[in-house]
Image 1: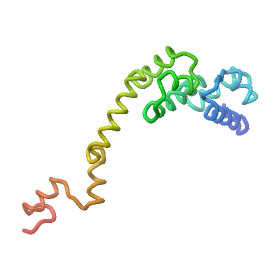
Image 2: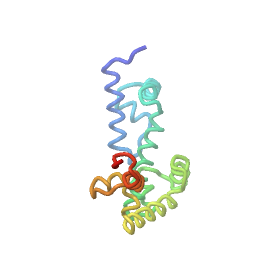
Image 3: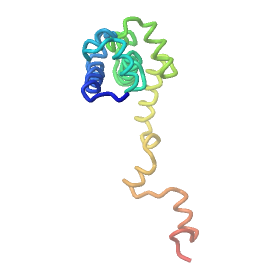
Image 4: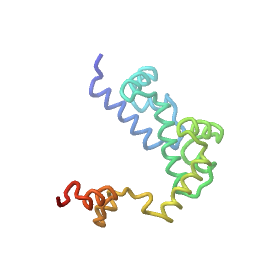
Length: 155
């Protein structure tokens, strides 16, 4: 059964509400109320449109923001946890590790190491094609082909 345009808009508006308020306490009743639909109908339609439940989407938004905060800010893991809307450091850490593959503290340390490496040796983290475009350098393969009379070389 197709979703009518007005119902689709209500679901999209509820998703936008999650995007804007992910750091607050949001439950299914609040979201269904925003969409002016029953909680069961809302849940079913949200999942149909976004291929995940409203709770899964909310968790995704929170983890995504936590990743960015852990990589760039000097907040503690507990502060990040609270700022993105989790009520428990335990549930935050468990969900973060489940989604990202490492604990929040490990993620922060890895991010710091990547930043330090990028600052110490920026050419290692910049793709060669970009460096070559900007400087006119050629890869070793291109130099040897041209020097040996290969592609583009004299015969």
